Amino acid sequence: MKDLMNMDDRETKQGKILGNRQKIDEYRKRISDNDYLDHAIKKIATDLSHYLTK
Image (tube, rainbow, N blue to C red; front, side):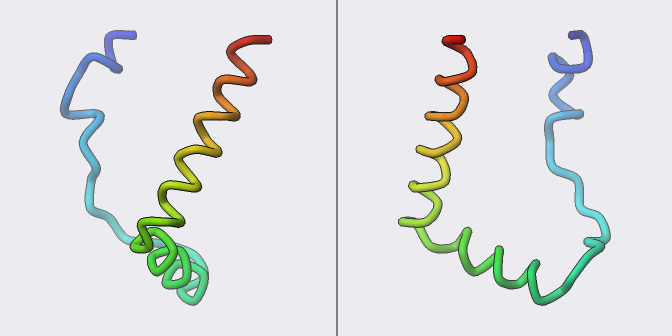
């Protein structure tokens, strides 16, 4: 729990991205679309609510 309170550990760190370059570029395009981002956030919130109420 102590690590969660450390602000430095929650900051994003720049690093080398490994994986399929084409898929990474596709996800970057999706994330830049506000409608897609809103949909993804709502889906995550719905899933979290579902699991937390179990």
